[in-house]
Image 1 (cartoon, rainbow, N blue to C red):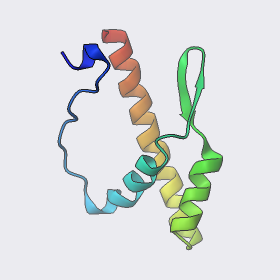
Image 2 (tube, rainbow, N blue to C red; image 1 turned 30 degrees about the vertical axis):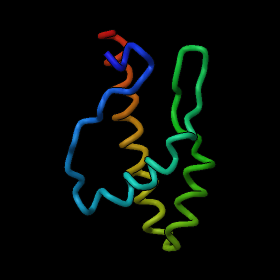
Image 3 (cartoon, rainbow, N blue to C red; image 1 turned 135 degrees about the vertical axis):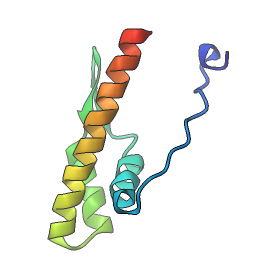
Image 4 (cartoon, helix red, strand yellow; image 1 turned 135 degrees about the horizontal axis):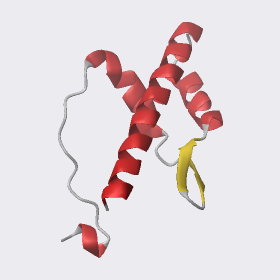
Length: 88
């Protein structure tokens, strides 16, 4: 009911493994940095993502791993959004 009135549904609860928490933190911090087109979301603005990673993590190896991990989360999010769009 609330979703039809413009309110978001209550999110599912889930467990985040400790090793995935830094990438999820970056992804959530960048949640307003999506690039869009007339057909919807394209993906994250990687200039913003890279800047957030660089300010939070100084080690280059860690930055590279976080960028890869955030990309994987982004791809999963885009697939979930597309499925939701298809199913109405």
